[in-house]
Image (cartoon, rainbow, N blue to C red; front, side):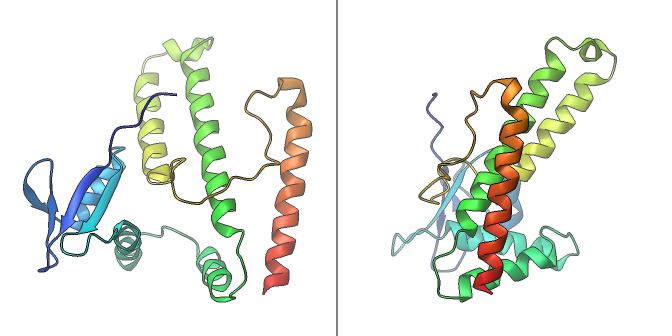
Length: 190
C-alpha cells in the first residue's frame, strides 16, 4: 500500500484566521473545502494550544453548505446522528458510516476500472469526460472519509474485497442482513 501524502497543515491564529503553511497565505473555509474536493487531506490546528480543530471546521463547512440550501445530508440522517450521539450509549453509527463510504469508494473504483478496461464503450467519444466527472463526483462525496478517519474499528463481518464473483449474491445477502441488524439496533436505541 502506497504511503498517503501528509495532510495540508492549516494553522488557526488567535484572530481565528486560517493560515496555509504550504503557500504561506491566509485561507477561508471555502478554500479548505476546495482543497478537500481536490482530494487533499487537511489538518487544522490551533497555533497556541496545538489542539486539532479539523473535525470542528469540517462540520462547519457542511453546516455552511446546508445553510445555503445545498442539501448535504437528508434530515432523517441528521436526526439519527443527533439521536445516536445524545443517547449516551455506545454508537455503531460512526463505524457504519465509515464502512458505507468505504464500500461506496471501492465500488466506484471498480466501476471506473471496468469503464476503462475490457469495455468497448470506453473508446467512445466523450467517455473520458464522463469518467472524469465520475471521479470528481466520488472525490467530492468521499473526501475526508478515508481509511484513517479516526473511527477506530472496522466491521469484521464485511465481505472481503477478494471474494469470488460467484459469491456476490451471498455477499449481498450478508450485507443486507448486517444492515437490517444495525437498523434494528438503532431503532432499539431510540
